[in-house]
Amino acid sequence: MKKSDFIVIAIIIMVLLPFFLFDTVYDGYCTANQRFPLWMAFLKFGILATFGEMLGCRVKTGKYYHEGFGLAPKFVVWGLLGMWIALAMSVFRLGIPAFMERYAAFSGISAAMAGPMSWMKLLGAFCISTMMNTSFAPVFMTVHKISDMHISEHGGAFSALFKPVDVKRHICEMDWGVQWGFVFKKTIPMFWIPAHTLTFCLPQDLQVLFAAFCGVVLGLLLSIAAKKGN
Image 1 (cartoon, rainbow, N blue to C red):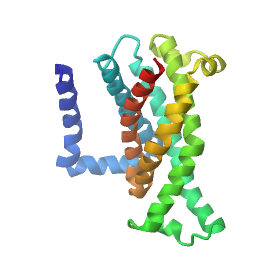
Image 2 (tube, rainbow, N blue to C red; image 1 turned 90 degrees about the vertical axis):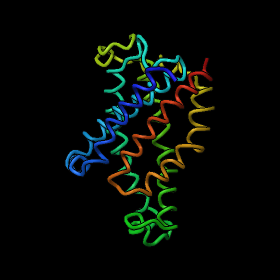
Image 3 (cartoon, rainbow, N blue to C red; image 1 turned 180 degrees about the vertical axis):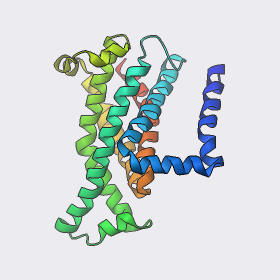
């Protein structure tokens, strides 16, 4: 381990420790979640998913940051994507159980999703996760990849956020062998569907936070995908 690794570990401990030591910190976090859910999603994904990409950078280059990485624009993009994810999670969390009750004869599944852990709740969480990851997730992943290519093209400058994105060209230049063969075909069924099944089994206040923690894993998966592309 390098000196930078110990510094990162120390920072993580310093950030997380107050939540375990002081009830007022955790209560304030819960209150902010209830009053400003989308802005909290912005912060959670902006911080955690960007950190995930920094971990991926550490895996690829041995450093958490390099010139052209684009820390600030990545934070903003991940924050906006986090708000999008939070909205999507709400739609699927409410919509899929309602559909299952009305059209698939799974009576009581909405109540089960709001109650303690049970086989009915696990089934509902799996169905929500499967539907979200086979419809919303591929579009989300493609949008993120295009934004990442756009930021890299502009050397990681913050001004990249205010420049038009050449979506058509980036789609044509994207390595679809990796995007389909690894990101879609492998990470969705092997990681994201199980991970989000667990997510929707958690209390609602923790679901977006856990999904944001999964963004840390996403950064590592993206680094693996980049290596495969190379």
